[in-house]
Image: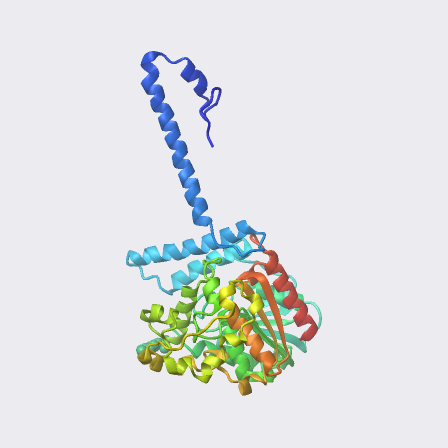
Length: 447
Ligand SMILES: *[C@@H]1O[C@H](CO)[C@@H](O)[C@H](O)[C@H]1NC(C)=O
């Protein structure tokens, strides 16, 4: 705060106290005016500072000590969203296009690595881009150790099936390749809305099958292939596992989105305001709609769970994700722990229209029944306490456990969506460092 007491020096060196003391009668008005100007400037500065602070204020998960890193991350991503919306308002088509994708990628790459261009060469890795099964991939091969019969990880990046790229994940995939000493194949599957379900899934499946069938050429031991991905990539992981079952040695869905049946799970309700630049309930829903090729006109209807008919709400499908699967200890809001799910409402017409997609286990892996889930490979489910997708991941863990699949839960109470990026770089998070370390240790031991 600025004080106009005697002896206070202004920035330009004027001694305000002396000025007032020495003033003559006829100077009175002009001195008062300059004091007022001075106060006004200070006030405006304060208001701007307050507005910036207010704009940067965001829901930071309790237990995350890097509050300013969280604010920088969230503000950068939110601002990017606003710029795109503003351009859109002025008639520039700003939905999911090559240039909005590029903007988001450059922003996130900078936040992750500290440089808009990302990382340079790495002496410990041979990194090259190619195509496998006709799909773009980037391959990371450790230069140390043997170059045959190595374990491998096929990675499906996140970004709501619409955004982000192999490039944005470069730091994470390098870390995994070096940390575990395995080959990583990062998949540049085709994206929505241009390519809706099941094309991104098909691309991931094709690359993975190619890796399994051509291990020798790639220096890979086909019996030691893991698959992983985060967010939409976690979804693709669960969907590909459903098809390939134990041909895969380990599947690692990282805070996956696994169903579009119930948009009012406790985590969708209690977590939508935490680091919203990364993910909110609404942004997640728009991703689902891109992937399903369903019109944005239905956003409000689906958000309120009116897209499922009363009959569907009482069906066996509802049971697959019902509150009986919730892990109450991970739900912070007491009243949400014993949630009742009303079944007496819903849009019959819309429900009929989208039912086939909604109940397709390759679209909603949680819609797979027990007989389909029981042959899943060893699974490492990573979930975050402050993520709208927390319940999707936790229900998946519970259901796999129930049918006897070997499944390990890595739940991070103070975790948030996207945390896996930030194990180093300019805005690291302790929880991101731990999540990456734990995953590497698990793969080292089990792959
Ligand atoms: C989405 O659906 C419309 C018809 O409703 C169709 O014309 C269009 O090709 C579909 N888009 C994709 C990407 O499948």
